[in-house]
Amino acid sequence: MLFRLLSGDFPRSRALTVVLIAILAGLALAPFIFPGTRSLNVAAKVAVFVLLVASYDLLLGYTGIVSFAHTMFFGIGGYGVGIAMAKMGASWGALALGIFAALALSLAIALAIGLLSLRVRAIFFAMITLAVASFFQILASQMSPVTGGEDGLSFRLPELLRERLVAYYVVLGVALALFLALLRVVNSPFGRVLLAIRENEFRAEAIGYRLVNYRTVANCLAALGATVAGVLYAIWLRYTGPDTTLSFNIMIDILLMVVIGGMGTMYGAVLGATLFVVAQNYLQDLMKLASGSLEGLPLLPALLHPDRWLLWLGVLFILCVYYFPAGIVGRLRR
Amino acid sequence: MAHPVLETHGLTIRFGGHVAVNGVSCAFAPGTLTAIVGPNGAGKTTYFNLISGQLKASAGRVSLFGEDVTRLSAPQRTHRGIGRAFQLTNLFPRLTVLENVRLAVQSRAGRGRDLWSMWGQHVELIEKAEHTLHRVGMAGRRDTIVSALPHGDQRKLEVAILLALEPDVFMFDEPTAGMSVDEVPVILELIEHIKALGDKTVLLVEHKMDVVQSLADRIIVLHQGELVADGDPASVIASPIVQEAYLGVAAHA
Image (cartoon, rainbow over all chains, first blue to last red; front, side):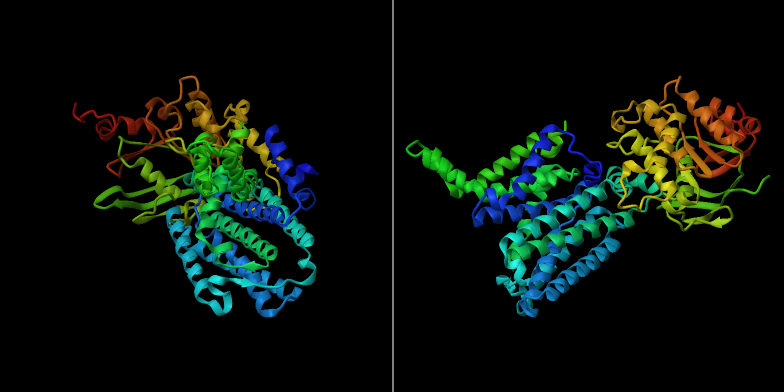
């Protein structure tokens, strides 16, 4: 049972197993053990980002291609729900239509980008994704009658989903199920071909695998994963806008989460996303505490002032990348 | 001669002004081993690349079982039966030995598109890969990461991947280069065995003349991209053009 659920890809490290179980338990019981709106927001964001980062790892870590369009697909999911809810009203039919339209659009774009640009060198693909993603960002901010422009869209959901507890478990359940699905894909015969392409594309082709086909399918799967993550995030926030989904800052965050967690491991996405989102939300509090307790001492309180939180986050990341080049999971598995 | 499996007709490739392979026409019959010899830079590996599809010909044709495959990509030619081992070891370095071979087995079985089953559950593919490793004498290394293998084992694995593809045309590009003396016989026996199957076509680029003489039914000589000699080993080696072109001995000396 567990074997099938994890597709035979166990954490292979006692410490990693403990951490993963702790994160899973934390997320599953979050509404009861971490009361308060803020902590539940953090937990939901962790769940969404685990899926978002895992689907990106399928591209970067497993297939070895760099895409800058992952937030675009994330945004398509968010706007799919947002536009449908805001324009058609809070019905289940509109929600389903929005989700379906978002998935179809993502699939079409991912397929087109893949077939057009994955034949040639991977750098060309990276450039194309950058261009298309920028285009989408501009589109979203300019078409304000539809997208709400820079303000984004606030909307109401069907009644059942307005219940926070229900919404939370929907988000968590879907994210978890799709994470396990991605874990299955990377451990399938197809997944091994992706690894082969990452390791040596010349030889992968010589033994009979057509690179463009495999890369394009990986690109489509990653895009669909990101779209669902966008759908979940919009459902949770009951809002969608450029800063919550489309922004390039989020693209950078995703890259960092993949690298910190460990590329090409899937479990790295869980660790990377959890660590990052929690740090993003609680580092400032921690620093306020530290700064306050060190009052009177020279320099230190100023250094630990909550406004410096980005500086310390940066330091943490540099240390992380320096000491764990294979990511936290790579380190734990050694 | 039995119907040729593989033929090249006026096969040519130009890189700018340089003609690396120039109008090579040759037919290869099943059950025979043809050695391709010539000095460095004669175009032997380039000729191989044109046949297996890594390079596209500027002119001329490659046909397999009578079908023109000149326009097909390398993976398409692989699926039609042209298998290739490389001169410089060309493996998947961070995967295990077994995974390397199994990727070839899986390609042959057409199972690469399988997204939802588990890699570890395809028992028949794994057994086939293990059997192939056994044939090259590497069964004990199945779980080693390839980048940690000694050079000789990497060369054997290169051959194992070719075997796993079960091609009709086997192309070996200096299979024993860099192997220690005691490792060479395993590979030579394997090549012998493939030849003895009778329906396989074997092409071998090799510098060691003793290897060529013991294995080849036929030798063709490339010199500056052109086919300059073709025939049974004894007469080709004795011919003046080979003495000059390959062994660097002046014809009149």
